[in-house]
Length: 185
Image (cartoon, rainbow, N blue to C red; front, side, top):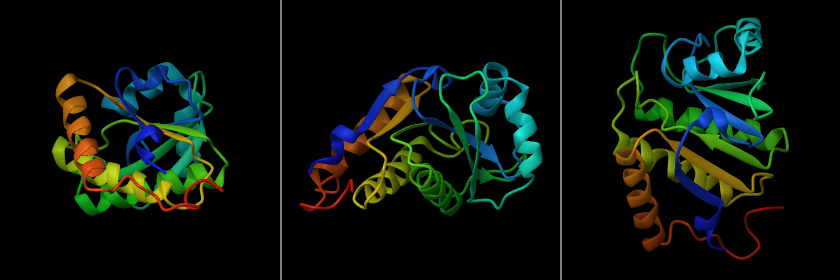
């Protein structure tokens, strides 16, 4: 099975996605400040921040789930790739992405949309982000999972072109192939 059809790349507004869950590029204190988190707070309403406050801090590299508030998405999965005011590392990004995917699968979700986590306020390089996140998604989709589609909703044409380039490289290298019988249950 070719996983490329399950990984959708697009330019757009993450907060407008009609998917089961969107992913917030979060800090480990789950404070919805600026960037993607701020947009989620503004469009989704105060209920999301209240749920985050009730959860409290999570480890860097972890993830937590809340309702989607007033968003079209039913849930927000907060992928903590940094400390509040800190920077994202490759290890934290890899772990936070994997945790977000695992939470989605545990909840039986079928669709999820990610931003380029850590590339805004946290300053992580977009090309490296694309490699890490797309590889984590491919590995996740090769195992039994409820997820049928993983969207990357990117904020500008440069980020989109980097993700398109990395996905094409992975496809050419056979990294987006799963053996017969693998993937969805």
